[in-house]
Image (tube, rainbow, N blue to C red; front, top):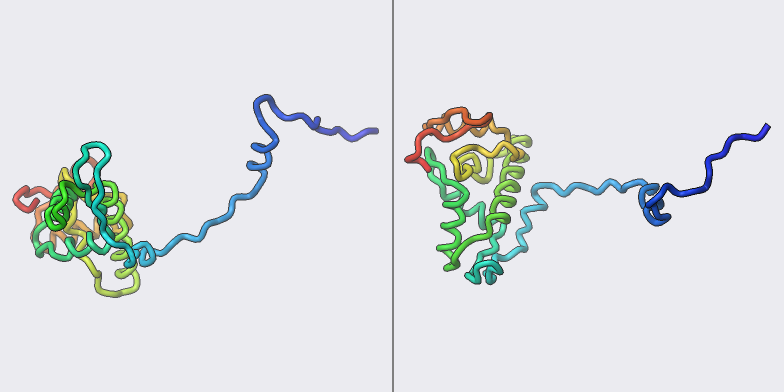
Amino acid sequence: MVAARTPNVLAAGTSRRRMAAVAKKPRKQKRLSWETKLRPDLQPRIVADQRSGESLLLPTPLLVGEVVALIPCGQVISLSQLRANLAQRFKAATTCPLMTGIFAGILAGVVADDLAQRRKPRWPIWRLVRDDGTLNPKWPLDVLYRASLLRAEGVRLTRRRGTWAVLSKEHC
């Protein structure tokens, strides 16, 4: 009796190169720590915005951290206010919103690591909110923890669309 064999024919539309790429096992990449992502070697740059032609500030994580560190207790600022502060400080028209949001998330990760290792948090990142006043639920630092810290500082909060939001607009 002859053993059944699968034909040595590729499915329609599949190349040998594609089959070889699928057959390889993906390598697990080592995740960078939040501390590494701070990149203290980076310097802020001002470039020309391709859309508007105005000057655009490309911030660094530590630069965003400097502004967050200046937020007084009991107050919050939005990401757009943070970007406006940075742009004014460096005499640029605007600050890159994508990089600012990414770097704020990195700061939240560093603060979460600080708290996990029972160290004092380096930045009061819980005082930074989205433009609509809500706390970012995708950050590594727990939303409920950030809400409890804000409430302890006297900021009024409410639940909005599944996450916490600043209730009193005079803080924004």
